[in-house]
Image 1 (cartoon, one colour):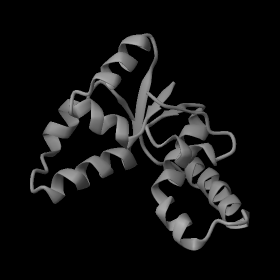
Image 2 (image 1 turned 180 degrees about the vertical axis):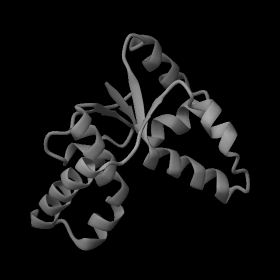
Image 3 (image 1 turned 90 degrees about the vertical axis):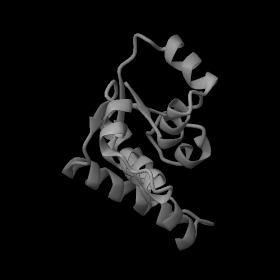
Length: 133
């Protein structure tokens, strides 16, 4: 399973060629995203004064949406605790990665590969597969 990060969803919406090519090359795969990624899309739309829930839902109706569940929370706590224990990672960096920790936890729990342009943000999480497009 491929978990599509917010960057992928934004580029899909914008009709970017690398996203189309990635989907064509992986058409037999199952795609998912998280409620957290949809929230990030909605924030961007709301900031432009263009929030349309139905449009977002319709645009991504081909993607399975994973809700953030109890097991995801426990895995996220382990991932974040590791960040706190990592030399050179300060609280500002941990705060900046808050959403990515949650998304990574869903990916790890569901054994999904995160598909993103922000590969470095996810590579630091042990047990989370990540690839670019």
